[in-house]
Length: 296
Image (cartoon, rainbow, N blue to C red; front, side, top):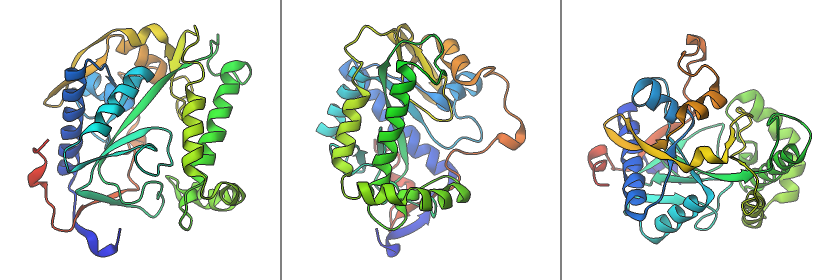
């Protein structure tokens, strides 16, 4: 997207209004189609501890078991309001192993992260796939550890395949960006232009245990290696308040959040209270404005 397409900056309140409108839209689709989902990560923590956003947070995460994830993607591919777009390898070049729903009236700028250029304010949609059983989900040996290593190898191949300058080195900090720009360059050359096939293969890899009788489910996060859960946790859902909305969560939020964060009701030290996407700047496209945030 050209530099002249950027309009006014998106304010913090507009950012949240847009995210909440997208969450409300997803909730409406899911309730109409019998699709179950849960707030996830910091969004679920915020709902339980704050009744909405964690005060310093700047995103919304949603997780769905793979069957419900596929049902939601099918619905979002079928029809969307004109100002919403789906980022997923089935509809557009995508260099991340999960989906994003974004507001195309907005666009982001970042000197550190160029993995999805031209997209706007978003919410994340994560698939929760069946994982091999393990007594210790953080162990470096066994089928789960092997599956984790295979996922991260394929995920890095996908992000390294993006064309365009140093986009393959996208990161959240300058030291990480500079290190990747050097260390990932051979990987970038090897995978350049193969993004779609890598994304398809990675999606298939993530699902390889879904028809097994294994008892764990999750999505691999480097920052949260224990974020793998009993499959039974993802069988019961209930309503929860998030800001002015009523949305969905797993019933056993305590089991989820304890495994994810430990003592989740105690806020972190002030120095650790940082926004997840502080390296992004959001803008309206051209003459767009916040006047349409209620259109969903």
